Image 1 (tube, rainbow, N blue to C red):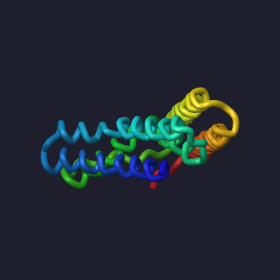
Image 2 (image 1 turned 90 degrees about the vertical axis):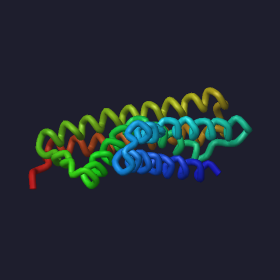
Image 3 (image 1 turned 180 degrees about the vertical axis):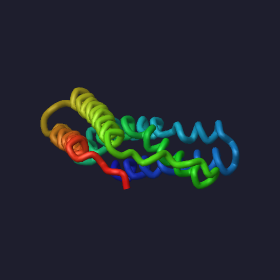
Image 4 (image 1 turned 30 degrees about the vertical axis):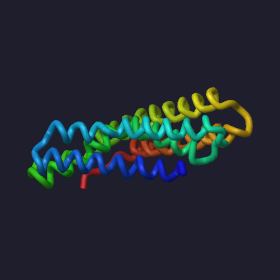
Length: 175
């Protein structure tokens, strides 16, 4: 059941983004569109509540509970940037507004290091959620699958760090 909620929250995020952009640029309701665009954190709270409720009812944590924590961390850290990316492309198609220039060289490298910081924030949030669940619902076998996600979080941050290091050594060239 929890995987369905995770998928629904992800789909809901993109439906809210698309709906917000349509209201903004097609219908002309900028404020209503902005409200829809701001629903991402609400979906994160829903996912956290459902995950906590599942554990509070006596459920044993499995990989889906860890995935929910990772989803919330990544969503909070990268969500605003994903909305801005979609907004720029939608505005370009609807109003002809120019797309942001593709970054190259050191500008791209700086952006990669900013992504490391964002991903680091997402990992810290996910680890905090996991820690809160372990504190609230006990240690041992019941939450072992949650604790098993901590090395996965380190790998996620490590991959982002490797990408930034590689872009520092070999900066992206202009086409």
